[in-house]
Picture 1 (cartoon, helix red, strand yellow):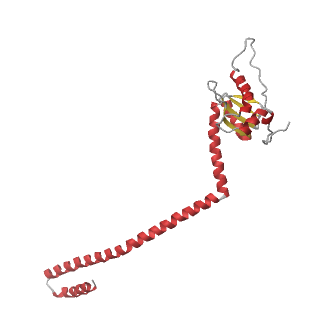
Picture 2: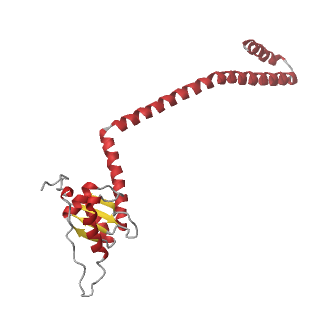
Picture 3: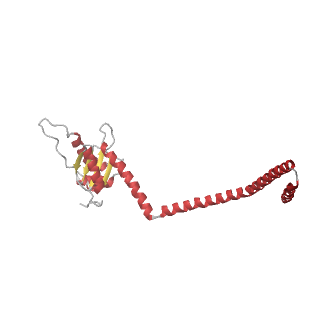
Length: 223
């Protein structure tokens, strides 16, 4: 290629001694050849440079992906981040639980510190199911949701604590509490019915088995 360039330089010097028509023809030839060899040189450079650029890009991507992975590990291992994630998950679960209160038949309370929402289908053989439960501000939200949907709120502190400490959300109540809960549900189902003497159903005082009695901290009460 160097020899061709030297040859073209000599041709350029000879243009001044040529007639116009041959000079134009030679100039055109030199221009075309120059463009060709410049393009060829650029192609060679590109063929060398492109693989290098691809390699560097891939290496940078590897580093970026690794940095992201490392950062995610740092974030996931951070106690503060874990705490915030857990709190957010609990908030989402609480919101969903509160929404279920509208399907409850009764909310049994402490009356302020504990609240447990129960649903019972009298046409099935299944035991009452816990739809929601909570303490303090969650209990308050359960009570408010119950009021918004005209659901009976029944104050029975020992039963509310027993239900709270022995049940899970969306699961049936334990057999030891069947009788006590049945008393409450029977009362609620009969609230709208008036007896022949014009009296409303008598409010029961649910009987709690001794092994199901808890204090507000969840410790069993020794009798």
